[in-house]
Length: 257
Length: 290
Image 1: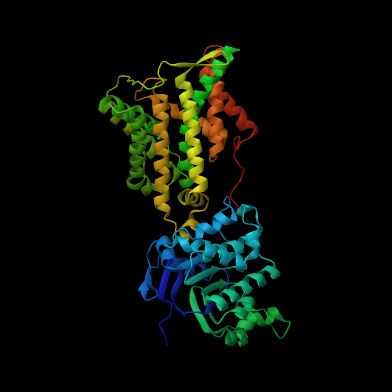
Image 2: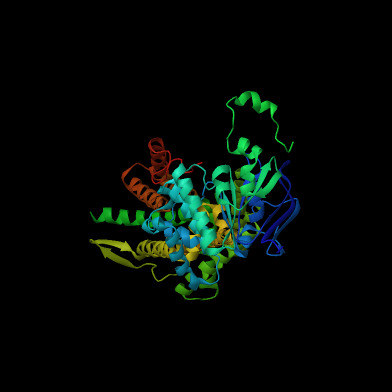
């Protein structure tokens, strides 16, 4: 097998005294969409923050394109080719859409290619062209999510990190966001690591999935296989054969415990 | 009528100085959420550096102006890199004490280097007057107003049209997202300190012919702080409007009201405005959304 684009090996990251991720190892291969699923507080966001350098791991290694990057400053990691679309979108609220997008390309050396990439982003997300002079803070959540993704694309990343892109969006918009993810991967071969609570949509889009619980990876498989598993169906997709939820919930244990 | 014009112009000039110092407060606060109580003392140092270049080295006024701006910008950049960057993340109280302490250090250093006696240097505007609407207006006042206008125009262009200026706005609005974009946030903040230092130098040199230069002119920063609060701390147009408003109020109340009102009128107005609009004239209430 080829070297993975990104490899986390045995990473442990702390919030003060609290160990948020406890020895996570995962590989992301070139050209795939990888999902990390898990409930609130499972440590999904911490994984992404550890990759992009906002948090530093106490143990373990983050290897991107064969180079260890853990502990580097986030702006250096961004320039190394990892773009992070943070949870809650985090646009620049008083800048226009166009200025936001250009900020995505701020750290690039090849300034000449920027106008072309702006067109590329407008091509993928035509609404941003119509809104290009709007101030980002005045737009809807879905528009801001699209803007945040577009802004990340402006850095021409080799790895795109998406943190809860469906957060706070209507089902229709969630569909649009994941359709965009699928197209970006399919048409440009962009490698995407997406973290989601919305397991159904994520599994339908991704190639490979990891299930995270209390800071540990408890399951990893192709998304197809994951979707077929009973545990996933019950605990993450909310599908159940019988209606007596309470009674069974306590008796049935997840197979990984 | 001509008296009103004269009072108006001197208030406007005084207000522009307040506005420039308030601008320094606001730029740094917006970016780093630090309140730099040494801003007035940076202005004082800028005036002394101008004195040194003009009287000490015999430089041309305009060259000295540019030179003082550059020197103060480099000084402020270094101040951020070596001192202030280290207190980021500490309680606000520590930052306040640190900048107040820096103010004391600057004043002490200035009086050691340049002595405690007031100094002056000759500018192209000293002693000249121009007639406006039949009223003789000192060229010094006009130079302050024009200098402030030009500087604000330059800053506006910088923030609006240059990539580094837009990056400064971006880093002020959302520091974390700026990091994610690969913007070197620490260097951007140091550059904002440099701009504040440069603005302070301009304010000091413009002010010099109006008063004399001594180590206490930095206390003008207190009124500029009031101006920044009046405008809504964190709003650049607010800082400018607040400074000019306080300058005008001071001059008019000094002439038309009883003795002593000149020094308190600005604060009375500040209190009244804050009663009605606690967020200040241009401030937005509760801007941060979760």
